[in-house]
Image (cartoon, rainbow, N blue to C red; front, side):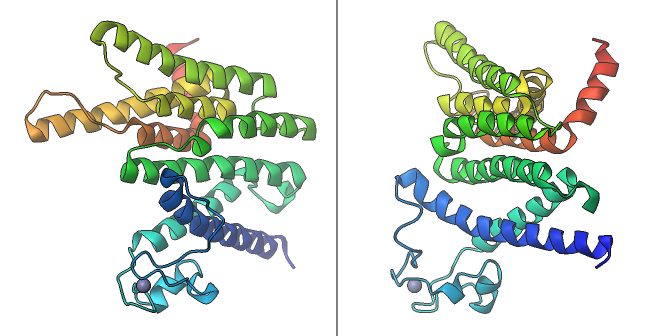
Length: 278
Ligand SMILES: [Zn+2]
């Protein structure tokens, strides 16, 4: 097998992993806000309760051959399910290509790095859909991921992988990330006697800090996230013609900032350092 075709096969496996985890993500989005187990019982139709057969659980394809309806009761199944699966499949392939740019880089440290960043992308995407649908960010996707971030940074450092922060930088990143939002919540409360942002956002930025370090990681993600959030908030305000309190879910914007940082962080940081001359 040539190096090119081997690389294609590896990408195919990465995509397959992504599709399967995308399927699991649908379960997380549906069950975690209700504190139900994501393992047991198996998936069932929300309308009639019929357990879903393994062959009707194949990512993306099952929805197509069922034509978007439950096999038992014919209730429609949301196209969001196959879309989440497909989107995470694509994201996983892009991540693999980003971390492992050619077959020469295919080794244990790079695979561990792909899995480590993959965990984060999974958490971000699952968090985004959960926050949009249920207005909460489950701890599993934010603060509980911090030990995974720090542990992964330590493991990658031990393996000699250079594209991740050291575990010390990871700990500082998590502390600074959570601390910035906690300070913002505290400051806002002192002035207005109400909470401006959610604690979920603080826990989320703590997790991002564990993956990307405090500087420029946390600051870059915060800058991208709040810029997008403000643009969205202002356009919403103009559209409604009100100047009342904004109800912008900040978590998804922070998550988008983290995805941008995962793929283009180094380039963005370089551009900024040229602008401001540190
Ligand atoms: Zn049904």
